Image (cartoon, rainbow, N blue to C red; front, side):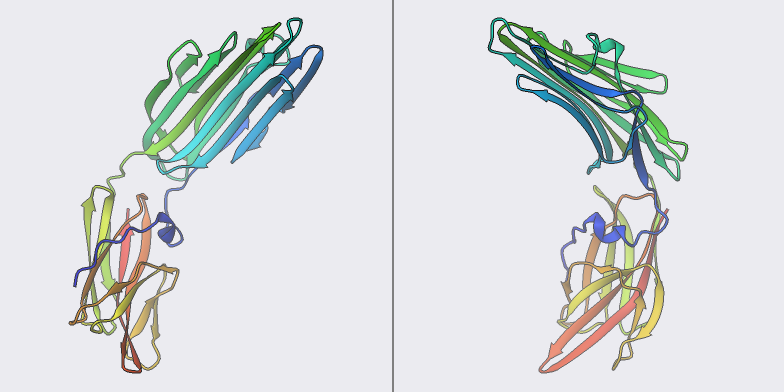
Amino acid sequence: MKIPKLSVAACLLAGVAGAQTHISVQGSTASVIGDFAQVGKTTQYKSIAKGTKFTTSLGVRAALRGAVAATGAVIRNTTRGVMASVHETGMVFSMSRSGGAVARTSKGADPRKELHLFDFRWSSRTAVKGKMILSLGGRAYGSAKTAAAVTIGSTTIRWNSSMRPIMKSLDVTVNATGLKVRVTTLGAAGVRGMGRASYMGMVSMVFVPAPSGRTCTVKPYGKSCATLAGKISSGRRGKILTMSLSGSLANGFGLTLIGTKQIKVQIPGTACYLLTSFRGMLHPFRTDAKGAATHSIHLPPRRSLSFNVQDVVLALSGRKLSISSSNGLAVTCR
């Protein structure tokens, strides 16, 4: 009987991937990253030193009652690819006609002289072509202003709060040398007397690998009690491995084992063998009255992938529990 295709989370195969493309991002501050807040004569300045490296997040914030300025940078994995982002936020308000407040990205009065500079480097052991999706945008209210720029190679994209958001896609290649992206930001808000002003600006960058056009193969290995055949096909979500089991236990409960090493260990009390090391298993399936089943998995979209699978079926007859296993399948994508 035919079992519906199984949706397999990438984490199930993450632990069994062989040599595979791993894209990483490292960030660093290329200038002092400082934020300044002032209400009346009270001031606060907080900063992060130039040359500070980070791989997850980094942030600084100056805050007084009536004035806040904050800067943050984040690196994280998304469903599309590895993303890095920088955001600037500032807010001031005053309820006094004789008061005033300031929030900005510089200690001095002119943020253009103390730009915030971030460097991000995407790297991979093997060259990976793809697109860098850039997004620059935000808003400003009152007298506030904010601006940002992204530089990749000789290309610089600039935005400020008087413009609409910008989204742009650039063809790039990530390799062992690394793809450097510089982000420049600034922001300022101020009021004299009663009033309020605020700014919010954000830059995000996502590297999306191009479809690899990889070739996947499946080869049977070893012998056991049942026969497992495999076939690779292409679908809308990428490569699909379809497995067809025959000659196993009738009306049984089956599991597909995943491993990285080929072994040969006889299952006690049977003439069957375990033929792969165990690193995980896929969703269960049922065999029909002839001991047959068909099930499929979507292969993770990695350029290189190498793992083994084997079906194991259990069947209960009265008080007797029987077990059967198939030959193994070696799956390789390059």
